[in-house]
Image 1 (tube, rainbow, N blue to C red):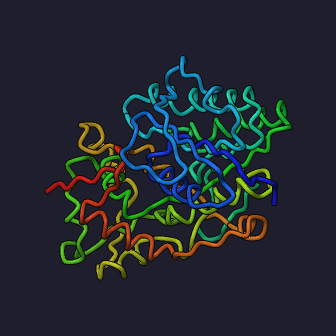
Image 2: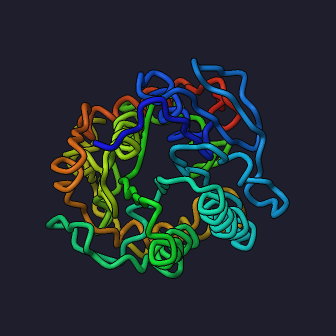
Image 3: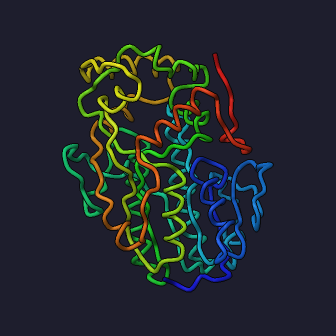
Length: 342
């Protein structure tokens, strides 16, 4: 374990799905003296030992080095999923904004940088076995999300060579869910007009079983605990984060009491592309292509080197999320604010 008693931790993207969980855990951590949350819009939520700053990473005038001054660690979580029709805008926030974070952390002499990478950074891989952190991280080039996550992996390769004094940790979590993020994720991926009450077992007599649609999930609070451990533990490099079992049509069919029905990839993609093309669906067909190709991840390194273990199974996580989805659940920050539709 590294010496982080009395530490000051700065968290970017502190009001989103992962950020709220990370800030809460750090604010409850006796080893942490204070937490500074950076977000575009300041929340009403005010956990102990936490102060807020309004910062837009897309603004090249933002004085991040001042925000990071005296920090024991920077946990970089900020990310924009929208607008999927304008990848230049997401590139400005996600890639150029991340470069500003990395450069400012080095300039401020921050000794620890924990970066939110993703399973989406991985190159296409197997669905019948798990891969470790050595699997290539070239992403799926047609999807902006994967392209940006993979690009930042290369940026951090160079950053680590240029700044060996900074301990860099890259978290590669699976799909992250919690009840409070249900409304946000409905808006991001399904659109603001998708009624949450539709996700009821009695309204889903069958579920589409699409070849390749087998992914991993993790409760956001469990991911946040891994981030907290990474701040305090003297480790470097990448860590896969996921819970068992993998989520596929068979598992969802059991949860909904619905029968999986085989649906060709081309049919599913055509429907998604049509809805995305007329802006009825925010999630792009390019991201759908990537999801079908994501590998399953082996999380042995996180368990052995971080001492991390998820408290919830993937099944419990998805069930909690679906309950929040139906109820329009949210939290007291702008990104997570709950909204019911339908």
